[in-house]
Picture 1 (cartoon, rainbow, N blue to C red):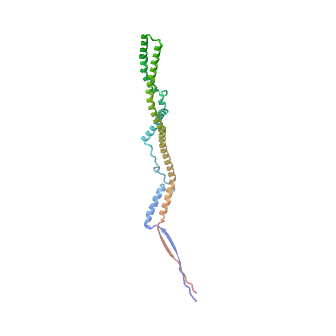
Picture 2: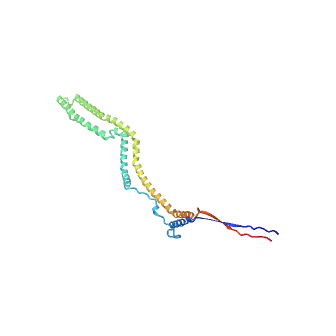
Picture 3: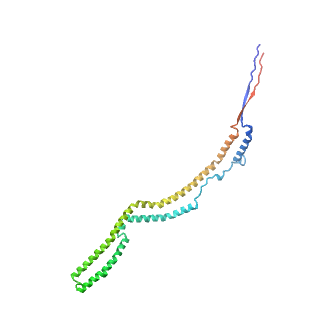
Length: 263
């Protein structure tokens, strides 16, 4: 009769956890985290959102507000001056300044220069001529008439020469001013838009400031909406750390049983 041998067996158990020296810190960390997330205890609501986290927008300073108000109030006056400048430039560019019929100053200057010349003829030349004709007894003669006509022609020619000496230099100067005004017309046209552009710039600054307020409001609303999820996310991450995911691993082998078999 033959005999048989026995076979032994066993099982292995693996445990993962923090070392003993880390466990007090683990408990303190988890308690602190729970206190931050649930300040009134678990199940009594999350920690409220802190308004101090809201974004702030600095308002315009007093100097900026004064500048905005002053700029807006001056726009109408600046536009009026720009219009006046453009109209005067157009007056010269059109050649109206060279024409006595459209330049009252030029016509008035010519009239003022003609007054003493006319007075001299009417009060000196003409009376002296008539007095000489009376003394000679030829007042109503054909010779006297011719002499009167010659005097009048000389007066008219002298007056024409006087006006020409006034109008010709004025025309030359006016032509130069006309060319200068024509060359400056593009700048004058652009100048008409400067007050409007300045006002638009002021409005843009106000709009940007208002948009900053809107953007801050949107960001604050997003932060408040995401606040609970951020807290819970931090809690989840903290629980993973406190749970010992990075701890040590130990294995234990359990002994098994044996037997003898024979006849």
